[in-house]
Image (cartoon, rainbow, N blue to C red):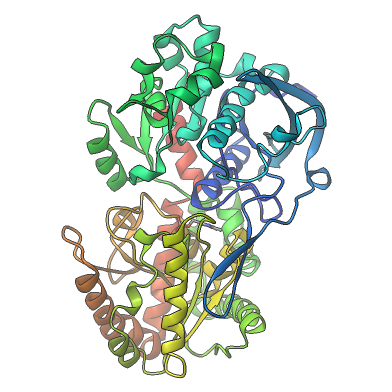
Length: 549
Ligand SMILES: *Cc1c(COP(=O)(O)O)cnc(C)c1O
């Protein structure tokens, strides 16, 4: 077999490929996994680089008061990943840290395979204190994070060299700033030739929220980086006296992109000295459609798996077939939800889903802004399914979940609402495919893209969402779903009040009184999903960002 010769090295602190490998915490990781899968489908030679988290992100448990606790079941990689029995080492301060390399091949729809490398700090040759460097995602103090990011960027480059992958790589893709130390390795190899490094690097930014950008004090960073710190590090990476990973990535990339058109506008304001392009995210169509949905498409539009634009012919699928498949998805979800919660969700009721990280800007509690109004709008006709993890150290996120629990209790007997613990990729597919409507209520413009709504759309589930992120591009109000909220001057009060109005006047009546119009909206949702596949996204990256000749 010809040796694999990657042309793009795709670095991401999370690459979520399946529910079985705990290598993601949320949207960023899921997106990265979908990027790699799309490359495999397109036979595009890319290699993914990430860390092996032996205690993953976490398993979420919630007590009766809505308090989240976390469990960290150990992950044994040896059943699923290939141990290359090779390691690289990096110098951090005066220590040498060894990183083992595991490989996972993603097989695309035509059989082409691309590898993901997972770097593992849990080696016996490491000092005890360093063995758990990579055991958890975004764990530890600032110094721990710095070391992890050095393992990611510098260890990742060393692994590419060791495996002979580096020779053919023309582009290093930094997915978020966590990976930006890879530029210091390239700088070292090119003896500080900034322009030549820039020509090889591209950067994708994912968060318009400043807290999402890592910074390290030079007191910690300079000794840790040692010989990897160039003399002009401050010129390259400084932000108000700290080493900013985002600034490092910005300065050493020939291309910078945001993950939706609206996010590109926001990011352009944040980085006025750079040109920020937009490549709107997409989701991997084969990973995010339920088995039932896949079966429906296989039967009616068999070429969809290789070419998802086949789904534009969804008018060829009958109302009955589409509805029956949806009801099958719904029953799979409700069976699980009822088994977990004993809340007696009914397949006959209009069911809304809301699942995402419990970050405050996502406003999981907007729905409950006016409880009386909500109860009177729902009139026993509507039920809700929520899920989402708060980061273990995000106290505000944990409060969001507690408030949600309080609201659920207060509405008990009037509106049936369940919260499903431990949101993950498996549950993500089950929920986005099994509800009737996908709800999203972020405070505009904080949702850079959002991808769960794309998963819903591909399964024929209409979105009801604030015009933020991808929905700002995808929404055709009243045709493939609904928008609400005043885009320019959003407030909880006005957004909530419009949400109730849209529920009452548009969504509930169509669902109960005009089933054929509803099914037509499902078809339009599927067509919208086609515009937001990872295949389309990767094509955009290849054409507008990578530009390999
Ligand atoms: C898709 C997905 C996300 C991202 O969804 P958003 O809409 O971007 O919040 C997060 N977590 C899991 C488990 C997912 O499947």
